[in-house]
Image (cartoon, rainbow, N blue to C red; front, top):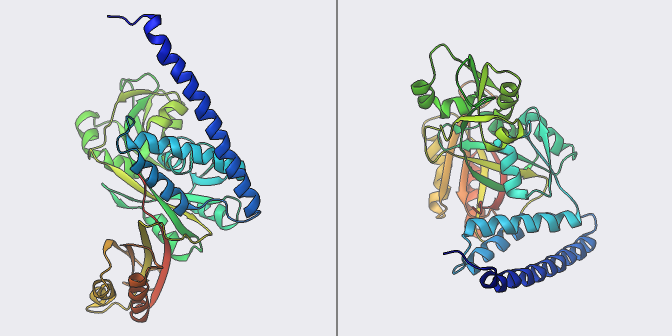
Length: 360
């Protein structure tokens, strides 16, 4: 049964009327954003804790809504992005070129109104923000399949930048090629982590004579494949669209829940949002019981630890630094006491930042 124009007309008229109301309300919201910007002057315009509170409140209000929470969150992120741009557009550094998962994470967190600035290395991303040539950097820190991103962790040890947010991004890898075929393909390009995340699929489906070549990013892999009919790339949807490549196969990652976590870093400290995380780096002399000594304050003060990662220190042979994530904000009394005790035990303690937990 097909609906008649007469049946559809009242619904279309209602939608037109609602659209007009939505537009009016959006402009009113933007007007308040502009007024806030004028009151702030040259101060910080982006408040991660405020955005997290808004998105959580919207999800709570959407309890009986038709649209899923993910869709509502995405819409309101874009609304906040456009309103923030009325105050002042932000520049976000990320590991390029265009089409990387890191760019997707930056857009997911800051919306399309922010200007995303590609960099050739993670080091360059950090330098741009440290020199205040960009406002924030979005940097990958760990993947659910392949673990931590070592270069980002190494930079966090010495960088003055502070973590003010996190992004969690579901990663889907596709095998891409100019014509959507493996025929004649001699090389597959991808970031080293993508090659590892798709290792079993490649072993099952790729001829042995096809070389696997690691490059700086999956978007770079897509760029190379776009220029060479004898090459394919492992990359995401954004890279496929950016470089006009066809899909040979979809979702070739070995782990179905493959997820990457990113940190947002800038110059500001973030106030508590009510659902936060604190990241820190510690080190201590290499002797028996060191780890137990470092972790004891968290147990004593009832602080929940969500991550413990060790990496070799550049200060000396067989010395290590520990990267720790804990639940809660550094300014809460229990965590303040735990960090005070930890500072007395550790040879080195640095709080990377306290920030809102990712709003999915």
